[in-house]
Length: 171
Image 1: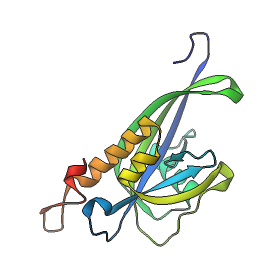
Image 2: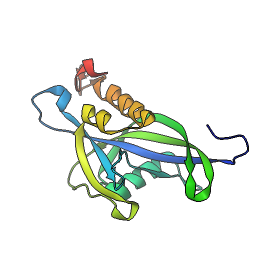
Image 3: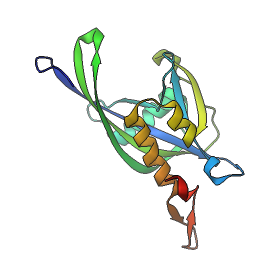
Image 4: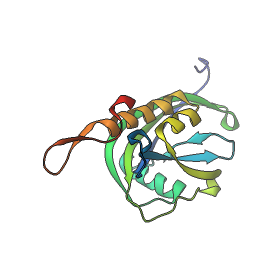
């Protein structure tokens, strides 16, 4: 927690948990999400700063496109927010950061490519369990768990029958 005499600046960002389904033999391996690896070695979700006049959803779409090259997505649901405090040494400032995340389905037709100007060196589609293993920040793992729960809820099909996507035991 910041020291009382230090300035704390608020920061707002938005991002996406981008997923795709594959033809895996096991339903739990059917869903893959897109992670970015930073040059520091850390794995993360695409996210970026909300500028004046922008909505969180618009920023999430923009940041997914900029940081991964993926534009062909549809927003499936709102995953809520993560909040954390960090110290930026270069500015000698503490930040109270809130990141709003959306679950986004990749609709295909593009290859993911990391935004090297932002220090990203790799994009990779991984299982939800692998994502939880690679992501070290507990707040971001909680967002992935919310995505996991959303992806395993029964979804009505065209005939109105509930059909389970993924493995209900994962939630």
